[in-house]
Length: 268
Image (cartoon, rainbow, N blue to C red; front, side):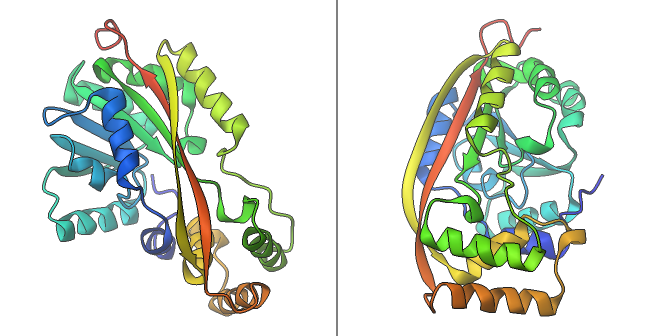
């Protein structure tokens, strides 16, 4: 079941991926009226960047991911933080029907998918998740900014040039974080019978060169990972392209797309 995003990739993900500010958790809690009696499923939870802060707001969080190394890091992070109401489950979007049978119908406040929807079959997932939700609960697809190499800033353009030199080909992948990806999410949620809403959280935050470089590696599978020598050369190339600047400012737009269940969704 592992996806190839284990080992060093999982370590880079935990160390260098940006987490979520409190305003994002506030928005999720408000959209689904989440409280202490609720269970939230974080599908494709990775190393727990969203699962763990969500656990502070609800009764229980179930983090689901197909990569054992991601889950191991998430579990350690939860223990280190003193989060006792998070459970970590090896699985993927195809396991949602089994999860529904395990938890019972109409028992879940929200299912979140953060930066992982492009790995999933939206139509099948959104339909299969319907029995999970209590009235007013539902699905949140969360896009945590754009990939570091596709942003409209000088530092992002410099990073993309270095990445293309290392890989030897143009880099155009946006991980479906663009408008076309959001359109696919919106249309699939509506097709599945959810009421659609959306919002966003905007902020600026410092981004170090180490996090920039590590963020690139966190998006690669283990098979794509460059050698240690190539990684050192890439980091040096990025620093040179940025003229020795070690910290830049990243404008982040966290987009939240909600599919809200109606009175009859949890029952059928």
